[in-house]
Length: 261
Length: 261
Image (cartoon, rainbow over all chains, first blue to last red):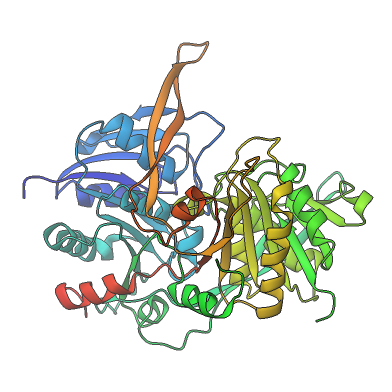
């Protein structure tokens, strides 16, 4: 194919190191335009801006590598929508990539993830879309061990395609000195979740407030899911859809409930 | 069963008329506690508050009908998490209901919906959960034609149960003078989406900004989905899951991609 047109976004904001790495990698594969939030948007899920205005400004952050970039006041999903309509206008986007997220988006995290909402928004628009995340929350996370793997996944996506309406949720294990990532596992979303707790504190004015804290608990004993892959030092790819219908429950309710017309 | 313990939330905020109606209806069925956002949270998707504090305060808004209520500074998903841990503490919640949303959450809207994120958060916690929405965005929407239907759905849920991890997405058509709602259709999420547009304007300081506007487009020609049900004056119930894995794509990629380990 001719040089593909690639839209890059994320949820950690346009200044994050992860999006810088992803942009450097993608600019070797096609024409790249970055449209990313002007501030961190972690945990934004599939939020969009309704009832408020949106702003978008050109950014010079990626000028040194010859990449056009825009920072947007909205959420990751807003960025993709605004990119398509305002930045790319009529041009056909061949790929949306989001990330590299500083932190895991495996298992249930996919629901809370702004990174994945940008990718899913791309999928809704009928564009092949991928969200990349590294299981390391730190601002200074090490990303260099992912170069070949990311290129591999993107090349496979561009050459073989993915079914319409699907976004890939790709997660990577952290760098280990003497243990390269073993490979890639295409797998399902693990049935693991957060066990939240709330740390109650007093502000200087005597009023109480909370910090949400929690432990990630994996009760999924399968070996065909993303948590297993990551724990065993593989990269994981979960193909995600935006049809949230539970068809098995649909059949169950149709057969067992008496209120259906 | 003994009097069920019901948690009520929404995304339009604790002062909205929809949550007032839902609370009035639920207080005839069980012990009710309201934990809802202190400001409108429409379009928040499954956002959670990370990296910022949360506040929760007791509210007297439902004192006249003997219902305990709390307003929370966070998103709908935060409300359910904070309710479970801070308000209900060890008590077992029998049902989470969210809404009644002022506006449709059918089809793709389920992804952007704060109302449904509260219900899905309940489902993640293993609690039977239902989001109710009316296809009318106005603040003064008429809700009285829904009384019997909502009671019916909740009674069926409490008596027959729903599979663990499932939240029901219930949408209602608007009131029509001479046409009562025909019944309830248990159905799948329609493949309909928004065709966005951006209304570009100038602020008083000469800088441009955008309003997101759009048309809802339904290309789904099936008769087994929520859009069909609503268009034909039925209430729709879509059972929703939080496993976003596309299993058909998982099989397709496993067979056709060469990068899988």
